[in-house]
Length: 261
Ligand SMILES: [Zn+2]
Image 1 (spheres, rainbow, N blue to C red):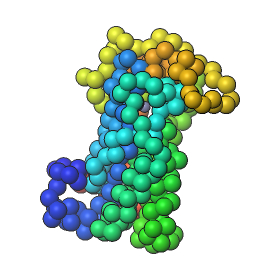
Image 2 (image 1 turned 135 degrees about the vertical axis):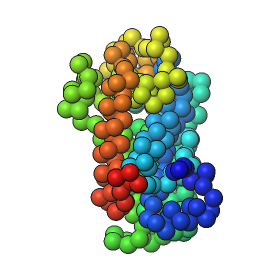
Image 3 (image 1 turned 30 degrees about the vertical axis):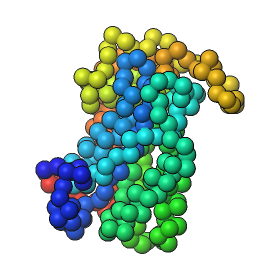
């Protein structure tokens, strides 16, 4: 049984929604992640987590938003790398806003956004806020939107339990140990294990300068080394994150148990 909306007929979708299916909306990016990971890493992770969650709660997955807000030097390596196709903020806000509004108008009023790209966070928030305003939704009403980014689900204690040498901070984890491990679990065929970045994280000044100068960034498009990344750790992370995201959706969106539960 597929959980992807685009693979269902309209009548099959109608049945799933009538049976109480929540809709998941993955949001990704096309962004440099070092020489060892694909540009679509954030989209692949968002869709991968959505598939894991959908299997746990019988959710339907809406077509993902493949683009994200433009990469920043301090948080994503910068937008100067070839392949970094960043959206203007208002375009991303508009995509999120219009998608929620359209889902809700068609009766899909319980929506969970699964974000895979750090720079998207506030623009997803704004898309939700504007959709709520468009639909005049109120707390306790039919429309409930939950947003979550996978890295917020992982604590330092989790990383300490999974990795012998855990990263100093999840903040430096763009293209590094954690994200590379998740990709080794989800799509090992797309990871170049012989091209792991070897550099540590760069300490940036507590301000930004525009136009952004690529020379201020680091040399790989990853924020730190991915040495130590492995599929076993990645699988543990995927399970932990998907379990907790599904629990959050069950709680907030009253999603049902999976067929297998
Ligand atoms: Zn990423």
